[in-house]
Amino acid sequence: MPHSPLRLILDGQALVSNWRWLDSRSGSAACGAAVKADGYGLGAAQIVRRLAGAGCRDFFVATWAEADTVIDTLGGASLSVLHGVAGEDIASAAASPARPVLNTPRQVGLWKQAAPGRPCDVMIDTGIGRLGLSPYEARSGLLDGLTIDTLMSHLARADEQSEMNSRQRAAFAALAEAIPARRYSLANSAGICLGADYAFGLTRPGLALYGGIPRGEASGHIRQVVRVEAQVVQRKPIPAGSSVGYGATFTADRERELAILNIGYADGYLRGFSGRGRAFFEGAVLPVAGRVSMDLTAVLADDAPNLAEGEWVELDYALPAAAAQSGLSQYELLTTLGRRHRKEWR
Ligand SMILES: *Cc1c(COP(=O)(O)O)cnc(C)c1O
Image 1: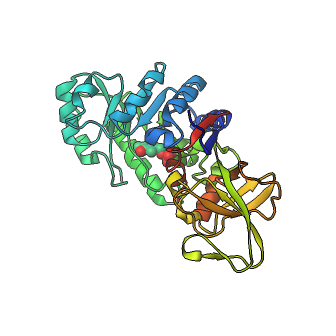
Image 2: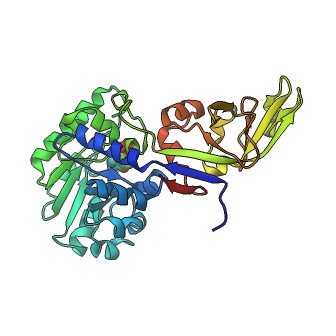
Image 3: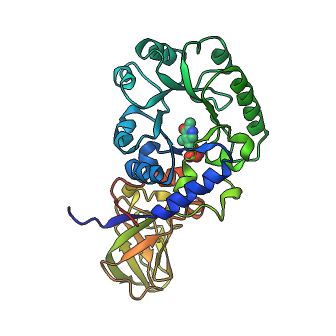
């Protein structure tokens, strides 16, 4: 394999420790793991293997194509496909060990016809206005004859202090009384932080597994999982008055030292970090100078005299801080990574 000048350093112990914390916060409910979008960019198959090894028994992906990438690593754990079934999926879905999460009357009809009696999950929209049957549809008899493993709903504002949370919780609790299922599930990462009332029988964290801090309750407990490192392509001094990057948005006030890093927006280091991000080398902080470009980013290296061509620097990618620097959400920061980086689990 050719050498890659970019790498993600992934901390397997932090991943498992985050899952264990979320599991303990889930009280008596089981704690699953959302591994859609290739495990939020970190590599779904590795995440499933590691969390299944730690005792996680329930995984969630978005599509059947994603299900294919993890089906062989489940080791007997269950897998749910959040987008349900389209006509194109139904034959392979009916033969798969994974379960669809049925979201629409048409999906319910397809499943009843193609896989009568086979377990499925069902999503009800209690207010997020995204996927799911309305509570009215769910109570209309439409679900009669299905074998529902997990009945679920999804919170819209769990990362905020909002009375919408308790309203959605109450609506879901009422549905759980009315609709028979093996178990019930409402909370994502932020929902787990809201307390045991929100856990029902199964929780579905994603973000916090991967080091995201959805709410204050998680800080101090959730550990950083991913570190982003890039190699220095060039180091050079620039004279006072010279500019850096497209648009010449940075001008050197005096002679400065620049290090040009092998990372840019095509690597998921998006332009929001222009003039605002930073990198670390041997304890020195290297601020981003000027605009991030497609494959390159310049940092000021005056405080890192030993930083030479070919050295590796770490980008500041602690998720809450990087979100504040870049104006991106912690979710976007994770899911834009991973395409060009070599992944090293440590
Ligand atoms: C993505 C997703 C989750 C996980 O959410 P996080 O906020 O990342 O914890 C849980 N449930 C559903 C339905 C999802 O789509």
